[in-house]
Image (cartoon, rainbow, N blue to C red; front, side):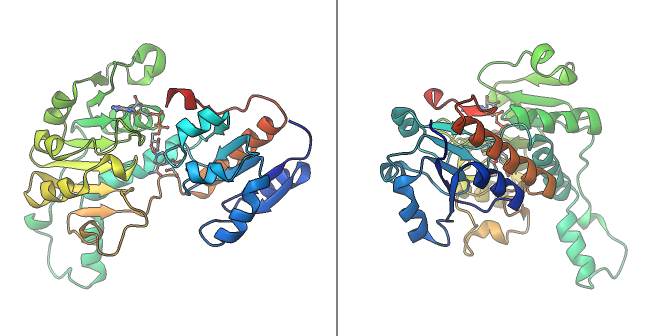
Length: 327
Ligand SMILES: NC(=O)c1ccc[n+]([C@@H]2O[C@H](COP(=O)([O-])OP(=O)(O)OC[C@H]3O[C@@H](n4cnc5c(N)ncnc54)[C@H](O)[C@@H]3O)[C@@H](O)[C@H]2O)c1
Ligand SMILES: O=C(O)[C@H](O)CO
């Protein structure tokens, strides 16, 4: 690629990271959620896009004939028309690795909040309803020593597994299409994590944590059949993507008592619609998709996304390219 390129920034970046782009290229900032007209106007000349949380689908790509590279400020790539990017030869970069520990912390916050009923009991205090010693009806469920089942045992799944096994003494079971060679890929988990078939994992686990990407193979994967295979009284946590879960089946499993509780950072539709029963269900702890939302981690993601984009525009191999051919 030649020297100054046209970059369209479709989500706010930290000022210093935006300045890095502006120093070398022509930059237009237009958030399609608040100024769709400006975004649409900049698309035809854009050679590069950087941002997140907006679908870059085939219709958007059709209006961006000069596009050569997209740098997503996210690890998940479900907002991008992957086959179309591959067909058009557009490079897709993302931000794996820099958010693993923070997202794992968020998932653990949900694990603790659901099992120890943190939000419910904190509200009891705040609302002046703590008038006598807490009785059995408010007791929780131990986390330490319980079995954790992971659907999704990639970068973030393994960070969750380390917390569970090494911090809380929890046996970890994971389900992937093929067992992971722990000695090579996750030596800290040797002797702590074991591969299971999906049904065996569900039958054994006190906590089932989904940390899956959204793809054709995972959309709606966690359905009524899977909930019915879980241990009665299990806790379900979703930190991956909302659409991997059949939300009606999740509600039915909560209402029948099959599930003790659910902790959800992600939903099929975000922001969660006001009428969703998941918003106010007494045994659901909902979070507004905050897995990676700390100052440090969001900054690291933005910096990596800018690094990726500048490298691609300089004709170098970016640190984190997503393989659209494999999608
Ligand atoms: N809540 C948040 O804020 C937040 C933050 C970061 C990532 N995420 C989501 O988490 C996902 C995982 O991130 P990662 O960095 O750990 O990804 P990763 O690619 O390292 O791991 C993905 C794991 O999912 C497994 N997997 C994929 N398809 C599967 C299937 N059909 N059946 C069983 N296992 C399957 C893979 O084998 C792998 O173990 C992201 O794609 C993103 O959607 C959410
Ligand atoms: O995929 C990711 O990085 C998170 O969900 C933030 O969008």
